[in-house]
Length: 110
Length: 116
Image 1 (cartoon, chains in turn purple, yellow):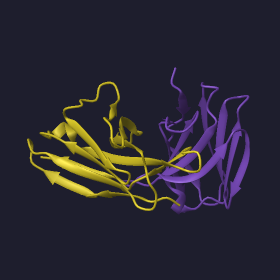
Image 2: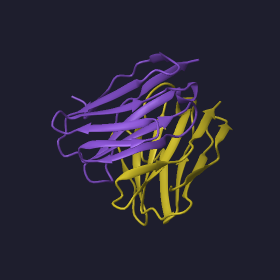
Image 3: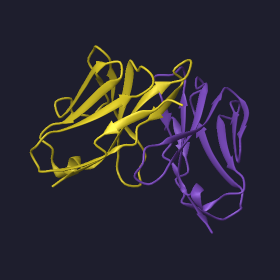
C-alpha cells in the first residue's frame, strides 16, 4: 500500500465550478500537510500548508485535514482557466521526510 | 516566501557527456536539499537527499556513480549526470525544506535535460 494515494484524474470542470481534490494516507504519524500546484514544465509551487487537523482558507482555496479519517482535501472556489494544472498533495511526519501523491491533473474549461 | 533557483533551465547534450545542474537557495540556508526526477505526466520521484558537508543519501535504484551530488555550501547543491544517455532525458527538480520547523518544501523551477 502506498503511503499517499491520490486520484490522478484527469479532472475537467467548467469555469466557475467548485473543485474538490483529495488524498488519503496510511501513516498516522503525518502531521504536516501541503498542496502544491504544478504547471506544465515548471517546478511545483506551494499553495497551502496545514499542520495537524482542521481547515485553512486562502482566497479561493480551502485546505481541510481530517486526521481521524486520514483524508485531506483541497477546494477551489470559482475555478478559473488559470487554475488548470496538476495538483500534488504532500505530507510529512516531522519535516525532512516528505511523501507525495501522484498528482491530479485539472483542466478548467472557459 | 523562500526562493529556490536552478540553472540551467534546460540543456541539450550529446550522449556520453556529463551535465551539471545547480540548485541554489536564494534567501535562506539549506543544510538539506532534495533532488527529484519527473517524467512526462508522472509524479515526482525522489532520487537523493543532499546533505551539506556530507555524502548524499540515494534512494533505492538510483546509481550513485551516475548521479553525483555535491552540497558544498548552505546555499548550493549540484547534481551531475555523468556519461548521460538518452534514457536520462527527464525533468530534474530540486527542493529545500523551509518553514520554522523545516516542515515544508520549496521547489526550484526545474531543469529539462535532453540527451541526444
